[in-house]
Length: 484
Image 1 (cartoon, one colour):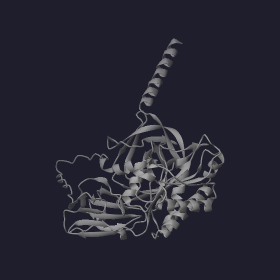
Image 2 (cartoon, helix red, strand yellow; image 1 turned 135 degrees about the vertical axis):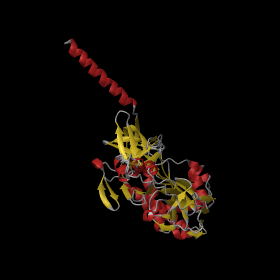
Image 3 (cartoon, rainbow, N blue to C red; image 1 turned 90 degrees about the horizontal axis):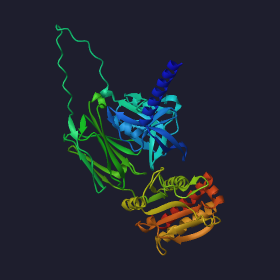
């Protein structure tokens, strides 16, 4: 009996030690995971460390275990494996591209398209959005994406560590030693690039340029989903990958990536991608490619530019009542307003188009730097000490200017479209109204502190009616001002 007790004690001690080891190798954190259109739930997950080719990868949203699969931010993995990632907000799709493979993942879908063919994700776990500390990332099952990109994945349960080995790091199968009589073939020398390509530069956001060391080289230029792509077969960039923030009238950002295979078995391909602002096309650029150099001037667009600002976001939920957050009410309204303005012939830039935290100064600076024609901020109100108050209020910084004219157009159109209680056009010293250089208004669509109006604001049909009114009023103003 004593012997049995001793053995049992040893077993329990070993189990306890394993538990301590496992718990020390991971931490738990609470983050938000997308469960439906515009809907997120907070879950507590075990985080995991992530390494690629033996190097720990630092990510702003960590890898974590969710529904039996380890989820990782897609952009970090793709960048580490030399792939390019594009995000389509309208379709909620992430597209990963290499020189020979295209992978399309759709948020909420457990099926991916790989070179146009449907492929099921492991265990039916879909790609989704994860939000932590106001940062939103598309996350995917690590094994699916890594293996599709030719990498191998290993999981260390004790360390809670995902190890990814890229194709070029895979150990080669040991070769049988050759007999002394067999002559040893000399090693093939490493293939050198035909030429180098400089890193793109932006001059005041209006002129973009880069060059190739071979003055006879002209890049292959093509367009793809709101992007202009420049490919240099045989070329090698000064730096493997990176991003240049432009935020100009036509080009939002420049991204560049180096690939080790591509056109006609070319050992190197340097790719430079221009991400265009919403509504912009290649025709809005003057592209000059002579003497190995590329110079691009952003011509602009005669259409009026409207910055649509969804209030709050990310770590800032805004007003919170009856289980609802203000930030979740105003985002779908802002997107609906933008779509209606674009359909009417406007260019639209959103201060945020997902659940991201944006500072007030960044919102105003964005509109000023872009030279927007009008600025519209969308909010929901609250007055907890007076829960019976309800209705629509539209604000401008001061009376007597174009901002007041815009506010009246929008306010009247909302009353017509959605029939809320009319609380009038008012003035307020709000930052985004005071610090913007163009006519700017802030629409308080209703009071969340009023239980009945809060339920109305949660209704998608009512949200669309409010958005229709905001868009109609803005369009009426732009017509009256001769801008549309």
